Image (cartoon, rainbow, N blue to C red; front, top):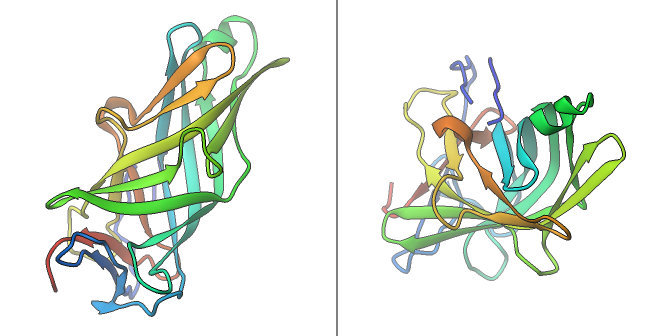
Length: 220
């Protein structure tokens, strides 16, 4: 299995349960497993991988491979499926600006866990939001190059894309190329745009048995 942060997955020979997030008639996504709604408050573990690019007019571009993990659940009392990103790691970062100075750039995720929310902003279109801008659930990354430290803070919203194959082991995807996907703010250099480079996407699926995670506006 090849994991790129941010992207392909070789089909896995595993007996997987389907995990589905259909929406109600009101467009509120809920979490399903084996096409049966998950009990409110029960956590379903997930993990993902792919590439992220951070772009700033002054600092340039930094691209890293990433892996992350957490959970989704149907909240007790109702409402859209939500969860947390509890682990996130970056590796093999490419930072031309730092390399030109003889260094090796790093991007360090911090202050986890990060909140995750699911929404259906329009019929048939789903988003997954991680963190928020200027709020108590902001996400944080620290960019490092030698003694340089740049702290980025904010929230990110991804477009959801269903699995491209019904076979076991094919993941769903998150894509950050749309307008408004997210810009993380720094104190001195302004905003860093976060994107999925070269049309790539972040893949994600169930953690326990490589279950499919899906968002749907229709029943099953």
